[in-house]
Amino acid sequence: MKNTRVLISGASLAGPALAFWLERYGFEVTVVEKAAELRPGGQAVDFKGPVHLSVLQQMGILEAVKQASVEDSDGTFVNAKGRTIGVVPGAFSGGEINIPRGDLAQLIYNLTAGKCEYVFGDSITSLTETSHGVDVTFVHGSARTFDIVIGADGIHSNVRKLAFGPETDYVTHLGYYYVLADLDLDLDDVAYNEPGRMVGLGGSKAPAFFVFASELLPRTDDIEVQKKQLIDAYRGGKWRVPELMAKIPTASTFYMDSISRVTTQHYSRGRVALLGDSAYGNALGGFGTGLAIVGAYVLAGELLRAEGDHTNAFAQYEAKYRDYASVSQKINAGRLLAPKSRPGIVGRNLLFTTMKVFSPAMKALEGPAKNLDLENYSALTTH
Image (cartoon, rainbow, N blue to C red):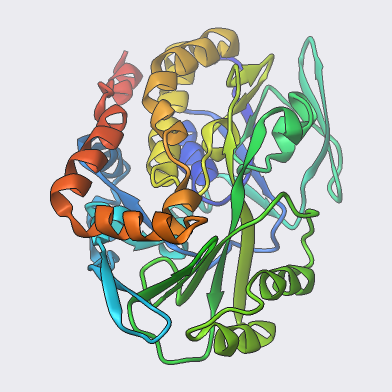
């Protein structure tokens, strides 16, 4: 085996999943994460179909994931007077198994803690490929050299920016933003729409879930600025919107991001490869977590098969995975969640309520996500 020193950027879901497989196959894995610790909380994520469940089973966490699963029952749409006007099918926002993101992250991290090196509170500042590997510098840590670097650091990937080019070359803003917030209020599983705006309360995504239409806003990590952007976007809202906006400044948790799609011509460049949302992300597209977990399985397996030959392994990973990952490109969740016109809202409600229309549409959309023959890479370790 060659090229065994692997650096993974990102300790959310894709990164630790890849670390699990690589460590099992004999690689030396370091995971760097800019957050100070494993990030708790977040929206419920889902798994669907035999491919997803098979990988979880092989990781040894399928039963634990099932035990942590949360119900994703139908919700209701209400009008400004609080009267029910439609149904939110649980099948739209969930899968066969729905688990809080933070719970899943902890499960996968526990598989690798003590076996892989985790560096929290740091991030990569430069990547320089040489004949012997990739020289890496960090914000805080000393410079180091690795054989392979993997970007598993999300839609706004730092590794992709450093190795492939600016975000604007790969990320398309789809015209919406979303917010997950934990607010101190009584919650029912309801959703309310105005043209270009949606509020969801009490669902599996988060205690309070907002989606609003907007041109691309100045990007900032300042949560106070983000809170103001949300409040500005919901000015003049009816129903419980004024009450909710009054509570946003004191929200105990708050996460905001654009609804964007990542399109990459290739998943790798030299000794650097992308995994999960950094390569094929689509915010709220409904398949991100499953694609990240299965992608980690395939990428690690191809590195094992190629005995660390990154050129061959990366090419096989892309060839085998691109069609499967194409399901992430099929949807703009913002258009479904926050139609920009009242007729659009009525039509969406009708689509959701009429399950004879909704179910075939979802099955057609999910088709590519079930079209992958999983190889038994672990069998290669016996040869």
